[in-house]
Image (cartoon, rainbow, N blue to C red):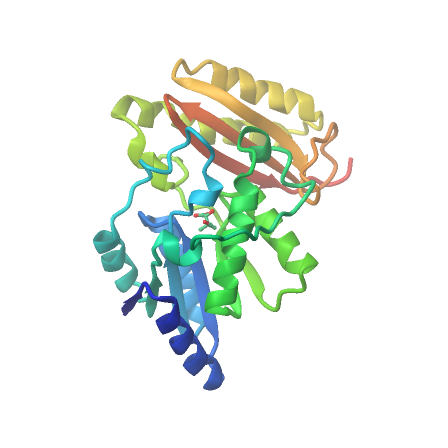
Length: 284
Ligand code: PAF
């Protein structure tokens, strides 16, 4: 495994692999890897000749007052974990290599970036789509892998790939959870033991929503209200949003009649956590 920080060296490797007719798989990450990331890498390993993991804490997708500075970083630990998969390349450029002085170009997907996380994190998805675009241009992957935990990010990236006629496949991998249900996230490291316990309210509320729907509830408002009441019952939790949305346009729905996304963002103490569940509902 090689750790590449230099754009020129990456270009050289990518050129050789492409010239040999081999496939490249990219797993974009911000590092501090966990089992969710490793699952993406293992999927890439099954299909691709060259597996590249990018590790880059992208300043452009963090707003003022967010956790860009505190975001956990440990390249030695990440290299050990990625090496165990194994992956071939860790691409970990410095910020100045991706955004040199005078940098002035941004990629923006409209509409679907305005709801859910887009409301509380204005500019976030513009940062994500810009950096993902740059990573696609640099690594030239045939396939790129993203986790379903960031459900809106997946919808936005798929939209960008289709709208800009990008020549690669996006593969989504299901959420990986801790044994007690907490969705894996690099930000879980911020949680105190008490907060870690309180954070289970996210996955529990999704399980309850699934049970209500399985029992025949089709009123999205009632499902949402049940979830909100559960989460509000947890003293350490503050809701950012709990929404039941159409999977295609991410707009809230009234009746559960087709595939929907139940998505939530909740602060546990100061830590903002995401979770979601996709539910396929038959017409009633
Ligand atoms: O999901 C993430 O970790 C980031 O948003 C991504 C896709 C690596 C872009 O910085």
